[in-house]
Image (cartoon, rainbow, N blue to C red):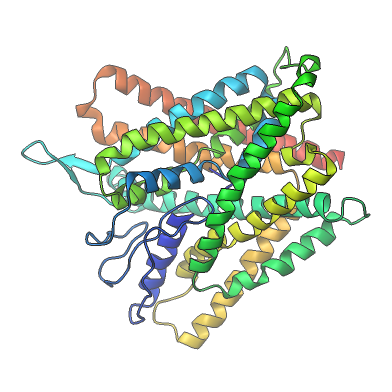
Length: 463
């Protein structure tokens, strides 16, 4: 997911803005600007063709290479929330390690079958792209039940994931401030949250994310540097590994489900894959690109999680950087803080645009509309802050997000839509595989939701 932790957000935002203000001239945005999760931005020079969920894509825009698409996907599943995986491994034991290696295979498969749902065969047996977005696929699958129900469900799940991602950025930013800047002073989390709120107030005025996306690109490079730095430190402490308990003999079910939700959320990327595949010069390379990017992500995440657990064992903290020595921890956490703050405007901007379209009318006066946009953004910023203050447990919130939106958008819906649209073209083994993925996603969603809520309530009672 991550929570994550978005170029498709920019695409959505621009599409919604054009629907609200048809008479305004939109600025062209370069295609391969990269944000924290490495997503792509699209050209919007033609008002009749927009780039985002629920809108056609301009066929004449510049395309990106397979390597650039791979960079996007790699960053999408290598965001700041990767630092919560060692704690998830602690909670889930050896089964968590198994699913940490299986999840990229499953998510890579669901991403590929989701994209395959965009295509249909013509009378000559050639594949033709007849749909553009995740929302289009959902609308087709639900057209007999309710024509617009599927698209609304996808948009609702998308909005939930955006809001939860914003909240996760606030939680991790507040924790990083408390542990990095004022770890030797008695500063309350409330003061840290207030400081974060003041730093993010300018997000309410953002109209163009190109500068932020460029800064976030360099932050993504810093993410890889930090990851390798932590792995290097763990390898340096290899003498301590023999004294560590490699896993609990009896896995706690609640902890396992929360940890599984964290793992699933860290691989969430399906929402923007239809747009990314459309942007590639060679869409036929999409499947191969998904394979090697998820293999790379699996290697890095498994190495980081296992080495961190072997190094710190039962003392592994929710954000693994908090386990580092004080000097190194301050440096790493400050870099992560900057990265989190620069990443927050992206999901915030996209969520605000979705809410603005729901509340405001396209024929509203410009002055009245601008005022209400500020009100909506202010309420959104304050709401995410309050929720972050109420649920300060990073791992529990990340597990809840992965169980709700991650499992549904990355596992259940792709498998369900693929069965619905490709049933007559599939043989029995592939049908069984899709049904298995759907049932697995359903199990993770329901059980993870229950267990996450139970542990959040228990955390409140302990506090």
